Image 1 (tube, protein in one colour):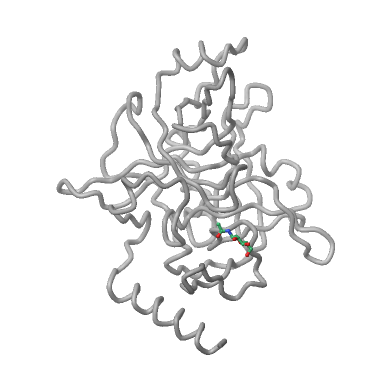
Image 2: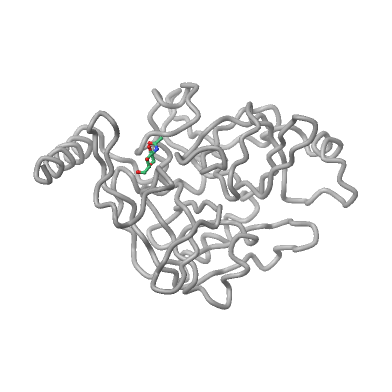
Length: 284
Ligand SMILES: *[C@@H]1O[C@H](CO)[C@@H](O)[C@H](O)[C@H]1NC(C)=O
């Protein structure tokens, strides 16, 4: 039986590797882009992983925070998610190649009801936590942190990085419906959806915030009230010769605001911080 499972996995992995050469980052399958599912396939948005608490003896519990792979040694999350780990980074770890939150690194393979199997999640330890120097606890602005891993990621179809930038990008995101993906509070499976981005002025009136609107945050409306975890990835699509080529990271979810049945996603804009992110990746 075990041999059979291994063969199935092997055939599948080799199959994908030869049929579809993976791009360097932001792998995109147009067939999955326009479906209306609220959960993802194992190889869909494979840069979304989870930040875990790591207790005595390596016991893992959930932090309810996503991490996003941007490089073989680095993932992104919010500053809010990692502040408590800053002095003891050993108490945090990252799970990648995960699609069902109830799976653990002990699951060598995970199979669905049709007997289709993929490798289980892989655990990574942290070498460093870098919180954005302008992360502001009061306004919540610049809620961003870079986590460095102790070991390089071996990419597979289920563990892939997203691009940090598009070849060409629109000046404004207002009025666009952008895809997002992350784990959420409603379901074990990695979720997805599209958020309609509105102007900052409009957003400010809806959240009835008394403080000035954080300069580097904007908001969008998802179709459902599902509460996604922090650091859910908001993505742009790089289009080359009229064909969607790959995904690039635009923002990560800082918080969600629910009022009168309306859900607002408040996103931390990463575009002003791309140079800071690249400098940190290159200097290590
Ligand atoms: C997630 O994994 C758990 C434990 O293996 C399983 O019981 C559950 O059915 C899975 N959920 C889905 C939707 O596949």
